[in-house]
Length: 68
Image (cartoon, rainbow, N blue to C red; front, top):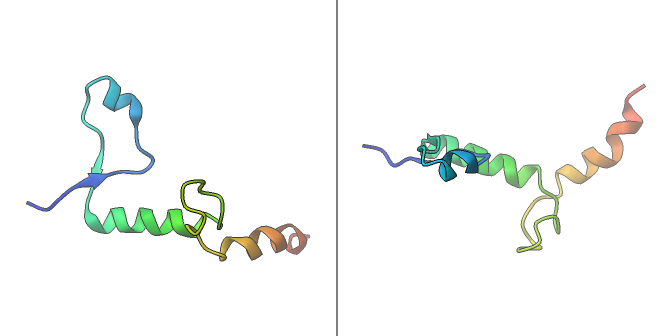
């Protein structure tokens, strides 16, 4: 049997009510983690200032100016 990982976003309500939380495969877990990295800019995650990417910064800066 393949290992299963927790699905993001984590459902704390299921955990606190005793239900089993949703799990995903390693491939889905990696895809979710990559999404978190790409959508997080440097310094946004307070526990690790170097976590994230610069990819989101130009999109945030130039996005409103390109919509006409």
